[in-house]
Length: 192
Image 1 (cartoon, one colour):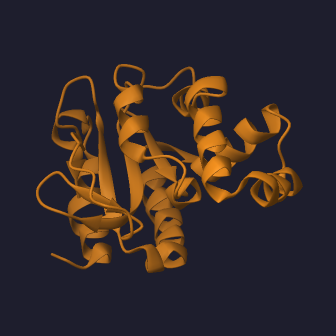
Image 2 (tube, one colour):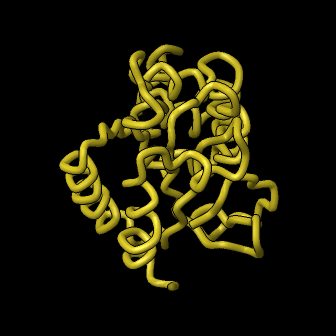
């Protein structure tokens, strides 16, 4: 099944409907999450399909929390006094590479992205009822690799989660972010 819509509705959705999807979703007991890979050009269609999937899962008794990495990025930058104008000014004065490195440093050290994500998970989350969808991953391009985020979430995320990844698969455990960057072969979660 190469079509992402079929994988979403015929493979991933039935798994998420299970009373406790953690074992089949995650490759490891301390990583109850998976990656759903889709073509970057399908971003807007995927967002619509995620909304429909969320509705179907909620009608089946699940509670779905959607976490936008674009919102997390905005929050991290704002906490460090950066907005769009500051980013444009930084790029003009120090260049794109230095600006990208600065944003990476903010997300890694000053406003760790894994902590921003973890804070958005409901305090009363139940692994048998709750699901997390991590979306808008493309907002991190080219500043932050999601493999780092997923490794840092290990042990912090106890409920089933799916990271919706705009890119291409490369071998059994490799992904090419946005279909542009070199493949990162370090993904341990299951890839759908």
